[in-house]
Length: 116
Length: 116
Image (cartoon, rainbow over all chains, first blue to last red):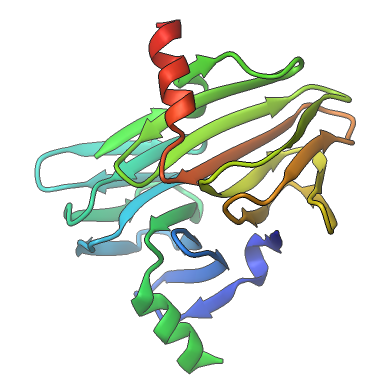
């Protein structure tokens, strides 16, 4: 078993106004804590990994190619493999999310090993 | 993309004093919202799925066969495949967790289809 507070994960380089930290990593799963500053954006992108997560604080607009959702604290989400998505902070406070990827993001692990 | 509030998932039969709700399910991932009442316990068990999650509220004792951890709000955890674990609410309020399993728990999906 591993236990890790949200704010003690390994920070990796990310988008302007956005921080990302790996908290725990397993064989099939990775947890990734994201904070998006006011008016900041995770630009539209996709990845082979499936993604789920929870909004821990704030309000964000999640946009895929076909739909938009307003996601508030306490809402969970699922983004299928290779589905384009962007996340924009549309609230008045920093927006916080805990994402889970399956399988783990090899690109984040490589960045984490470079930044340590 | 799917978006689902924590408290609107599909509730399945669980342990005394413990409620569990599936919020979103994908191909490799499932999100499962758990509330453990005061002094209640998820008894020691294991499963082939890897498990990660976050404590959203309260304080619990996580115990494996070899270690114990006190897990508070904002802490993430990883439980490897087939590792025995129990979770005991040792706080003064209901303890809330959002768990993620990979692959999804087929047993929970079967229970959910029976309870609908």
